[in-house]
Image 1: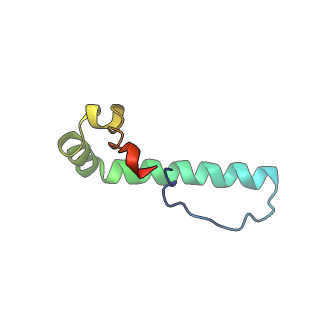
Image 2: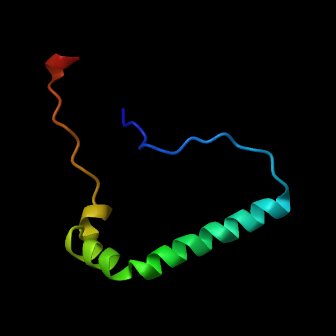
Length: 69
């Protein structure tokens, strides 16, 4: 069975609806600023190390012998 990738598990503090919107807006601005600052590097990495076919084609399933069951 496939294991999910690593993720950040944080305690979910109780915040108001307005605070949630403000925090989300801040995160969007942070990501946009990061992408703008490092656009050339990000573009270079994704255009050379990863082709679209790599992300769209699922990996081949492993060959399983019937004897292993």
